[in-house]
Length: 423
Ligand SMILES: [Zn+2]
Ligand SMILES: [Zn+2]
Image 1 (cartoon, helix red, strand yellow):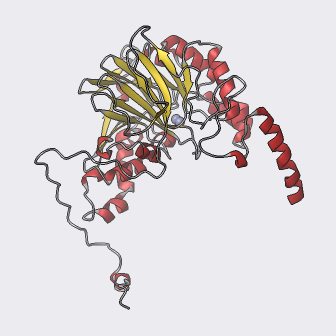
Image 2 (cartoon, helix red, strand yellow):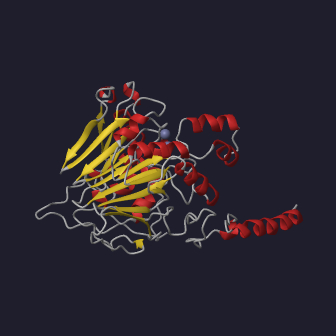
Image 3 (cartoon, protein in one colour):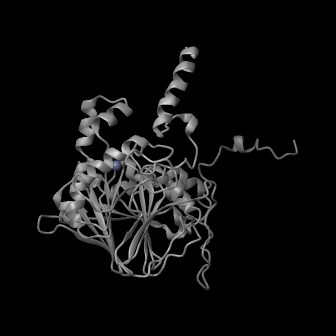
């Protein structure tokens, strides 16, 4: 057996190596060498965005801001008229080490920040952006699939260290009360009862609270297609339904200061959703791999793979969606980025749409102004500590700890055997 493998592996390496599309474990390193696909796109995880239009100039002749090659946290001020969108997680389940599930961060020049979806594996990337954690307290969820909300425990827990205020969660109601975001938040809170009780009186409790802001999915009709669900500080966030399995799945459109973005979560492409995102600066839409590749790579019967793909958006249909919405930049996400999946996806999109398009990978950063849209990759510290907290407002007092709960603690007879070093 060993001899056979010893013979086969070098052969494989030879073949793959010749194409420049190395996928063997021996080639795994970060960042990877930036070879290109046969169609000329950078390979994933090499520090370059997956696009041929990293800079989209919107106003010819305008004096354009220049950006460093990579976005490095804490080293770039967001201008007052600028929006920055970061792909915190660009993937699907099952969670990949190099591609977490789904989450997006939208930062505005007025200081506001919004997290949209918090899928599994995304919180470490969010943490690595070194944003004062107390400022990450607004989560909007597109729907309650676990690849979009499975990271909520991590978000709640990690941010709870530094934030002594609740995590607010926006999302839609479902067809029955137990399927809405309010029920989800209630159940998450209950599921964490042991966690919360154990820490009460030891660390501040304010950050351990979740508050749901559920909006009524039933309000959407053919004549009432979109609803304002957030309106503060000149930021307007609209929700609209998408075609994704059950009632309660929505997309969002955010508008601020003449800039806009839309993100539709998961969906079968519909003309309706494309129209809700019409004319936005950045339109983030799911993109799904073809059924044969999905079946093969997941050891799944083709029929099951086709069932899954049927509920999502293939590349040519994403092109059609962008052709209706005409965003300044179209973003495909929720996609399995591999060296060999990039080209067919771009080819499919291009069969229907010729505007600027990028395929998301984790920690891709998009800066948006009225003059240009610039897409880069972030470089972050894999061993980052928490970001420094901003100074508290003058006169602010730390709230006192809640009383320590004594009931139900470690049994006294176990406690009595604690080692003191003086045995
Ligand atoms: Zn999903
Ligand atoms: Zn989904």
